[in-house]
Length: 137
Image 1 (spheres, helix red, strand yellow):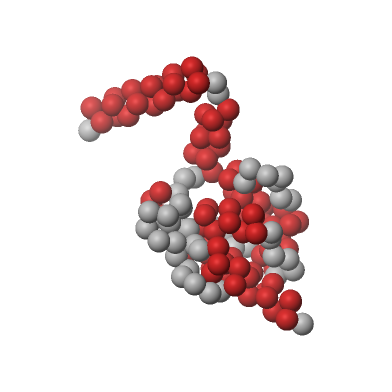
Image 2: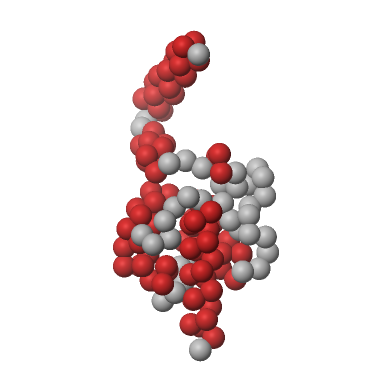
């Protein structure tokens, strides 16, 4: 009986964190997609995401840390409801302005797959585009 209450409580906190981060708590597809972009391990299925959202399962500690970092909450709060809800400023993912869209996260992952030479070229291109954009303002 206690385990089912823990799963339901986790589900409520996850849904709250999703809403606070401007994501839908009603879309396991979106949850799975956004999570998988950020998680370096084996991707989760939409079915697994649905189980998290409806209180049928709690993710592993490694997945919980990724969720917490992405949503800008403390992993301890997300799992147990204890500790602070929000991550401290300067912590990974703590500031809403520091979070990236899924396309940005995928771009960063792609950048990391490049060899050093091509990564340097990509960085220089981005810096050039930023300078051009600033000059327009």
